[in-house]
Image (tube, rainbow, N blue to C red):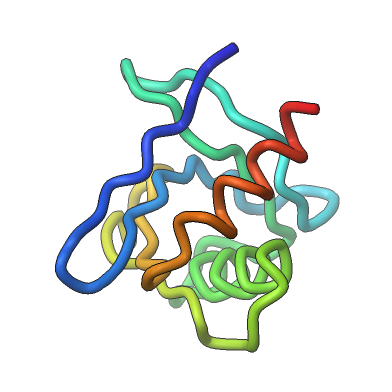
Length: 103
C-alpha cells in the first residue's frame, strides 16, 4: 500500500493531491503513486478554467474532511494537476479519512 506523507508547514499541513478535472463526478478516489510521491486522487466535474477546478477541489476536500466551507485552500499548483492544499492543523482528521480509504 502506498502511504501518503503529510507535511507540516508554518500555516498548517500540506496534503499532496492529483486532480483530474472534467470528470463525471466529484470524488476522492484513494491514494496512488505519482511522480515518485504518494498523492490523494481527486476528481471534479469542474473545468480547469478561471480557477473553477481548484475551487471545486477545495470544496470537495472540505466536504471529505467534514469541515466548514473554505477551511481548505489550494496552496500550490494552480495550473498543474498536482495540487498542495493547506489544511491547517488537521493531521489527525486527515489520517482518519485516509485510513477509511485504505480499509
